[in-house]
Image 1 (cartoon, one colour):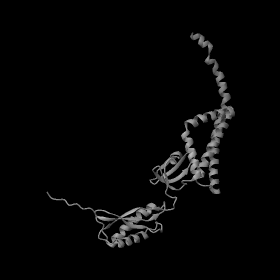
Image 2 (cartoon, one colour):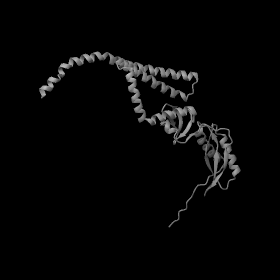
Image 3 (tube, rainbow, N blue to C red):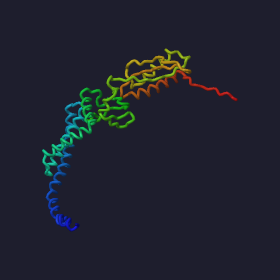
Image 4 (tube, rainbow, N blue to C red):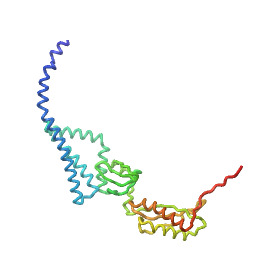
Length: 275
């Protein structure tokens, strides 16, 4: 039986034939590899030039990353098709294969296509733009890029969050930059024995020394009474860029002003009985 199999297919005899076939295809394969390497490099150069051109022509900066990534994908597909043609694969057959695979992949990746559609909707309706401070799905930070499938957010603690566009648009989106200013919520304790109008003027004077805050009149009112002090609501205004500067510097100036005015805030005390 083994002799019949060996007689039916002599691998050793076929080796020269395989070598000749490999030598014949080698230039095509090498050519295809060269096409891919050079083609992807050219695509990268074209995308970079496109980005610079869009910046000079004043194209909406929200649209720039989206268009660049879209052009990059389309050009890379053309490079792959060209490399396939160089190997000897018929482009029409390859394109039909890609189309069939695309349908299968599209069905399996309907969520990804949804992220693409959401990206288009973001660019059309502009609930947020590049540079805006946003709160999306509990992520607070500045929008760095709006890409084909994702929105890139740089959080306030300097983390890079890559959020799929479909997730970004599936819930409540809060644009903290849209109205041009943010209210800074502060709370200041005032002793019960102090006069409210006097303390209010001291706080206003302290806030006037905070150069980062907006000129809008701050709110300074009594919020509630606790066991030891009167709790005041102090509400200056800031931009999204100066929010934390106003927050910390306001407290610093109010503390300094209270010290100069001799105002001492009460604190809880406990009496310990000797047994």
